[in-house]
Image (tube, rainbow, N blue to C red; front, side, top):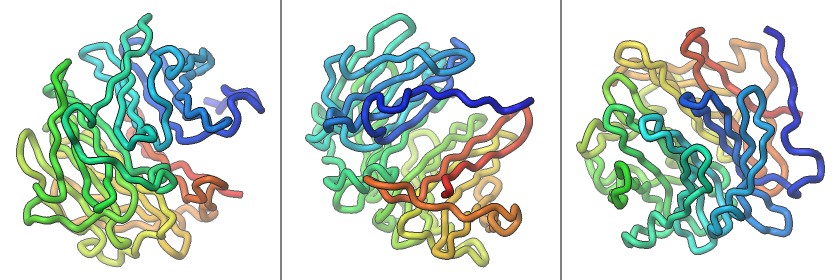
Length: 317
């Protein structure tokens, strides 16, 4: 199959693009791309969707009357409910949700304000590097959103259906407590067969894993120190992860080290992680940072289950 290019945002439209995220709605067979417009700092969240190409445009902020966004985006689909969800931070440092069903206008809600959850990071530049993540546990249909706060803590918001979110401070609930404080971005994924949840974040240049199942408190470990030969994380590096949902699940975390190489940490279940130097193995060029406003080393990854292949994406100049 030959790759094809499709420009979904005409040059000059909506000003400079801010944070972006995407997902696929398997129930509809549609693709969805979301980004925050930074034109005149309006903070509107735009959606492009479609089956072959994501070319149908909608302004989710205008349609819902929601507050503008100032930080990164996270999104997921609850296939059992037929609902799509986008999460973002507003200028009041609350985490907001936009959600909708097919043919509906998006609904907007404040996830953190009504329950008194801690405020998100005050540095929205740092937020754009990835201090927001979300996923769905298909086994019980529960939704989970994770974000960082100024004190270095990682917070979880969890709920099912239309229930109000329940807040947990994962740093303080971790065993042994407390887990190391977060100083960089985070990412998350779920093992489909078991419902085991994983959150990964950067602490002083090292990759920390939080893992749990059901209503358990998370256990934590330092993947960087456990993986033989694993270098630290570049201060500008994003963090990305995915799981190959076969058997116990093979976990994979990716980051850029100070020498500009893309590193992979991988392991099965709760085994000791292995380190791979993907730049050396592939002969690919080193990543380069994006321009203003984030000047960050971006990474994105995913798995194609039907092929059994893994893919890592990053920018170069």
